[in-house]
Length: 139
Image (cartoon, rainbow, N blue to C red; front, side, top):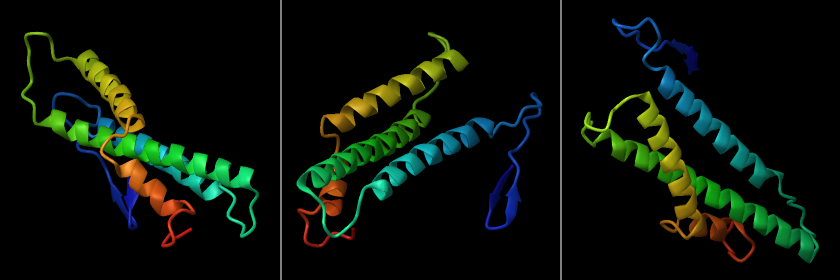
């Protein structure tokens, strides 16, 4: 059960199965929310006092860079997930739950490596916006 703006949302029930068909999507949303909360708390947890030692600044910038890369990986994983929804199902190699789990794990690792290698530039943009090298930063 999910609550949005005071309204309770229930996943739809499949007529052939008594389990909620939306439970996988709810689980993905919960995982995404947990990853987003972890990245946000990492950024917010960085020391923000006006006077910081160079070591503290370097550690803070390192934390921001890691959180930025994690956020880009999350965004890329979401993009890949939506892309796979458009690909027709292939029953020749099997199209069971195991294949979906494997594809999801593969996409997660692939997008992590993409983000660490530069990705689409989102992590760099976020990092530049949040570090002290940008005079227009919001931090």
